[in-house]
Length: 398
Image (cartoon, rainbow, N blue to C red; front, side, top):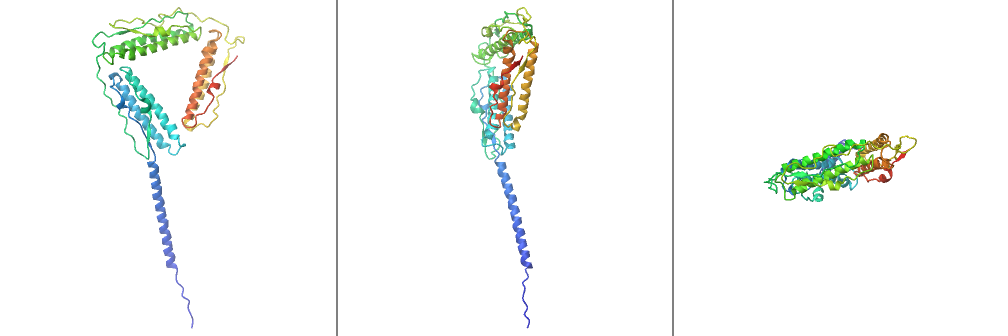
């Protein structure tokens, strides 16, 4: 009798296992997909937005003449916030723990502070300048975990009704400024600049008189002094100083008494103000610059400037590269301008002319330019020391 061994077919079991494997794989893929979606959602939620204090509610009554400028700057505050939010979204994961503060919130604070200052200044031209808490208003925080955008800065303000002032019912006053007289010979190379600044003094008086007429009744008892006479004094001081400097580039620098001639008073009953300088009207007779030996000697050879190379010895962030390139090119332009000045002023001034009128100003320009490069790099990385002090000073190729 033959025995037959029984074999169990495994075909069915194999199919079952295959279906189980396929099912597990499908579930795994689905779970991975869900996980990726959750991760993406979490990443999206993790993008913060800036949260800045509102400035408009802190403002006093806005003079009508300042309304447009104040509204423009309030709108600019919104633009700055939008730009910061875009930067937060586009730089997720970049930098270290202080990246957001150093590269986004810090620069935003600087921009806001400047804008808020401009708002206060624009109000102060027609009324008492407000003392705004600039530091606290400029500082922004973050809405973490995708908290959405903060409420936008209100940009519409209501102009205040004019208040009757001391001169509201009487004649409109005009400014009365002392004459500025040039009591030294004007070098030919300085004549045009002297004429421009004398004309500017006249323009400043005319603008102040227009301001007096257009702001009658505005502000309190100190409005005219704070908003018109004070700024006029500052402008006149700067213009007279520029004339001293212009003459000093080619001769001994004079003292034109900028301090004493800057302050103006009022013709309370109106009428033409004194001190109406016309271009060149009060200038001393023009005299050609005294001819001296060619600067630097060397048998009449024109010297050129010799400046140390400025080398960037740190990695330059991509966001700073364009600004670095512009400032490196500017250093070269400054040298070229100084060389042109050396060639065009041969024989002018005294023994210290080149140092005072060319090498000194060149040093200041180079120092500022190198500092700007340090600042540009420092916005997105550690601020380097490029040795602005040591690399600013240039000498002469005699």
